[in-house]
Image: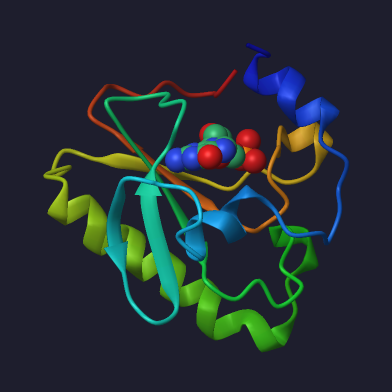
Length: 129
Ligand code: DGP
């Protein structure tokens, strides 16, 4: 299986539907930990920490990545971060956690539907590799 970096470098930035649309539409299974009318959160298929959850907006609205954010996205961006905090509590990450948004090839983004990674359950390092 390709490394996360190889997958990211192979993924061309695009506005086409992604695997996350299939998860939203329940066409493929995912381990969903949170869902409301705006946000879906599920466990990452390739976890980088004991807790690794991906939060996505249910409606992409042009947000292939954070670099495409406009003022119209303020509400969903805030909602994603606030939901990440709720899920961190739900997951028992009282000692801390990390939120990551990868953007573009150099940011190691492999899926072009904005998403926030919630990582926890182990000691994180800084600076990241
Ligand atoms: P990024 O590299 O930031 O674009 O992260 C995309 C993440 O999505 C990556 O950590 C793996 C995860 N992922 C990709 N396909 C699937 C899938 O089909 N199911 C789940 N649960 N996660 C997926």
